[in-house]
Image (cartoon, one colour):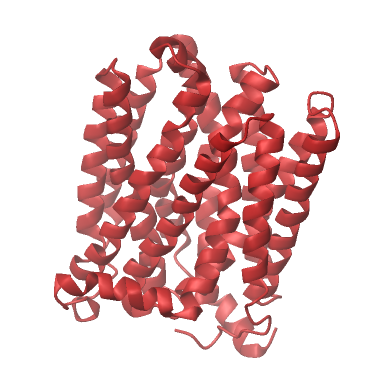
Length: 409
């Protein structure tokens, strides 16, 4: 690493503030992951197969896509704080509706509304980091944020299983409503405005879609953003099928499911922290390529196990392949995000929103693909994940391995 890279990597950033942002973003994983152990009991209540209720996961992603595309340009126009108040209020109201309903249609609609609120945290926190940090600092900050928010996927299924032992699945949504209220308090006390008035977008609202069109044409953004979305897709596909795979196919209990799910989340968190250290020694593109290859090899191994072996007999190997694929995100996601936002300081909110929308669009697309294959969940997961990760790998290798972001402010 050259001197400028080293200096940029070593510049301090507000650790406590970034950790607080991680706590706020954790509402997204909590809203999804606490819910997963409850899918079989919800399916029983509604009298439908688990796979039907599991489709609420990609349906939730639709709300995340639409919401982010709104909050991005809105936050570029009014600042980062007001959108957080609006989104968290929507989330709390939607969570209460989920907690009170016994109607499947109302639940699905309220979950979409919940997603429309939850997604504001991802948009605002990514944009706030880009407002205040250079790209290399940003990669380290995103890694640290994952350390905090990543506790949610580890604890959420366990917490969800514990709540289900004591109460019905409705109680899960009362907990989420409380977490949304906590985020409103954190916003009031600690989320100071990071977008100065002179840097706000004052163009007419009608120009918003032109701004998105301009981003799509910007190769410095769209290539790493789409690549990161495809690689992140491996995680969203796993989310969509995890209950069916572990609890129906492998017959794990709610507690065993929580352990398996938490182990995969731990691998992701651990490698994000390794990534934070390695940004001082290697270029971001080099780390992104390493993580990409790790995900690709793991996805292909998963497909191989599903097609050529008895998935039931080789459960430990299947779990190991999934673990390595998800862990690889620790290198791909912080670096792809930092590279995509590096040259977007003047429109960080819009770029953050489009990047997030791309990621969840992949999740929706992958969820639909899963439903097309009438084979074992291991084979389905292997086919879809390998396809998405392979395309993401091709895009990553279009990036210049010697890309120098140390001089970007």
